[in-house]
Every structure is written in structure tokens, then in C-alpha cells.
Image (cartoon, rainbow, N blue to C red; front, side):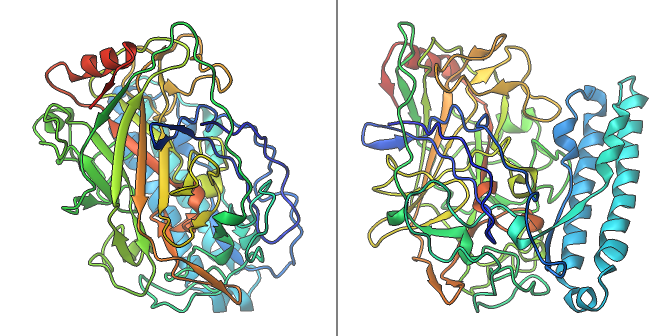
Length: 507
């Protein structure tokens, strides 16, 4: 049972950078993530900095400032317009990355090609889009921080500057920390092949993104001590594994009203009517996959794909092959959803329609500030949790993704402009919420997959698997994330809180 309080070191001068941080709690035969510190861990890394590289090092991806995370005060009347423009920024990055991946010959012949033909035009498009965001905000009387215009400029990263590769502080051997990676020999789908970056679609994962979990030293430590007023109960809701393949590449929280706003495919359990155009009223009418028919909440996460050369049905669709998410979508064997309490206080019921995103789909370029990815294997969850690498599990063991959502609420807002500031993690040492925040039931999720064992041979990965993501994020494991919208009927929210506060284990 535990959490990892180790601080990240500055990156080693290797061809692959990694920051390993993981936290987990075990109990009742299941490992439930209770990652209080996940979004607050010390980050001493300079992303893409202090790296020695040849002048001719090949550009791997485009890195742009995340404008959405800087917008903390957007008037409600402007939010739809702003969300649309933020989605346009994502689309522009995707287009620039696709051009980057398909012009390798031109880049080799002209050292200024990337700047003149990709990064420069991208800055101009972003500048115009940020200006439209300013107009949307000011039109309804809001204030706009003009310094956000400085976020128009993007940079590029070589393969050694992206998150992934060598596992730090693991005390064990690492398979192939050599960094840049050739394609694994699978079929190419979804556009031009990007050299030196691995993956069936050419944009990851690479061999350095995988580690044999049996060679990683334990990194899970103790959880906060329960105080006198702790809420020690649990509430489990059973909503299935999305066996009916309810998928889309929308994101109604971040990009409402925008088709393919996520640029990757989500699994949905719980509420069955979730797409870019859903409203709170839609959620109430959406039906549910949960056994408890009063649980209409939306639980959704990016799918995992097996990159075995199999063409999924979305090979030529948005979110799939068009966004370089390729391979066969895997259905989880288990999807366990559990609400747990606070070690420091009683919890209040979740408000209706509360939105929470945990983790960061752009962490490979954004850095670790909001990262909350945790990967492990059955039989290892209470020993090892990985953030920047996918585990290679031994025979008989399955891949596990765990999530623990922010469990402190500001008591007022069901969402915020950047979808972050209305909720928070408690203090990692004490479990106490920040001043002005109230403890709510902490949503935890555990997804188990039967994944063919990846094999590293001659600097290449075979039987690779990867989480869906934005193309320029190179399918790095640190980009894993999870989304939630709380929707209940029949007093269920109060029942969940009451069960947790009285120390019962309910389902």
C-alpha cells in the first residue's frame, strides 16, 4: 500500500529521457491508485533542455505551449467559441506534425525546411487563432492576458527530448535505452512513415518506451495515516468493459461541439450518450451500462491498441488511422470503478455534472505538471508503478492501468476554464485538501488488459502496444489520462458519500 515520494532527478545524458514517478494503494486484494502527489511531484527536469545532440539530429515532433492550460478565467458566454478555437490549435499541431512526418527527404536536403515550411507557418496560424480567442473573451466583457500571444511560437524536439526511455531510480537493468527507434516491421497505416521513431504508424512507441517490469526496483511506499475523522468506506460501481464498443474521438469536456476534438479514440462505460454534442440533459437521458441504473456517470479513457499490423475498422477514420492511431483496439478484461474516502476527513457528495480530467494527454511535450499515468502488471501493482514506460509483463501477468482522480473540490464550480482549477489533489503527506476545498469521494479506476508480450530485438520493438493519443505525443505512456462526468439519479451521490463516511464497503 503506498505512494512514491521520490523526486525526479535531472535527465541523464542519454538518448532517451524519462521521469519515473508512481504511487499506489493496495487493499482488499485489489490495488487501487490513491495518487495524492501525482500532479504535484517535484519536477526538476528541463524538457528538451541540457541535451547534447548533433546539429543534424532528426526532428521527432512539434512542441507547442498548451494555451488551454493558461486560460483560467473564460466567461461562460465565451466558452463555446474558445473551446472551438482551442480545438483548432490542436488540429493545426496535428497537421504540422503530419507534414513533419511526411517530408523527411526535404528536411535532409534543406536544414531550414522545418522552420520555413512547418514551424513558421504554424506560428502564424496559432497567432491568428489566439487572437480570435481574445476577441471571443473580450466580446462578452471578459479580460484577456495579452502575454498569451507569446504562446503562438512552437519548437521542435528530437527523439532524445521526448518523454520516455530510460527508467530512473529503478535499480535494475533496462532493455535498450538507446533512444531513437526504427519501425518495428508492422504494416504501415494512416499516412507517411516517420523514420527513427518506432511504432507501426511511424510515430511511436519506440523500444525505449518499454521496460521489463521484473527488472524495476519497487517504488511504491506508504500512504497517509488515517486521522480521527477519516472516511474509510468504499463504493464500487460495475459498469462493464465497453464490450459493445461504444467509441468516438470526441471530448465533450475539453472540446464541446467539436467532432474529433480528442484526435484519439475513447472507450465509454456508464453513460451511453456521450459525444461532442452531448449536454447535461442528454446525459440524464443517455442510459447506462452500469448495473446500478441510477449511475448515469460518464467514465471514459483512451483505448489501447495492439500494433500487430491488423487494420482496425477506423484505419481510415478520424481518431484512428487519420490521426496515426493504428492497430487493433483491445477490450479490457476488467474495468473496476471504485470510490474511496479521505484519510483526513469526511467527504461531501459529488455535485451533479461535475467534470474531472486526470492526467495529461499532452504530457510528452507539456511536461509532468498534470501527468497522472500509472502502468503496472498483475502481481506487481503494490511494488512497481510506471509513469514514463509501458511494462513488459512476465508470462501469466496482465497489463494494468490505474487512475485516481482529484478528490478535492472548490465547493462551487462543476468545471473550470482549463478543466483543472475547480478540483485538486490533497496534500500527499497528510491527505488534507487545500484551503477552500472540500474532500469528495475519490474516483479510482483499474483497467486490466491481456496484451501480447512485447519483445525488444536489435533496437526494435515487436508486439508493441500503445495508448491512443494526439499524433505529436508519439504514443508515450506518460500521456495516459482519464475523464469523468458525475451524473446520478435517485440520491445515489449522497448514498456513495454516506457509505464512505460510515466506513462501509458498498457495491
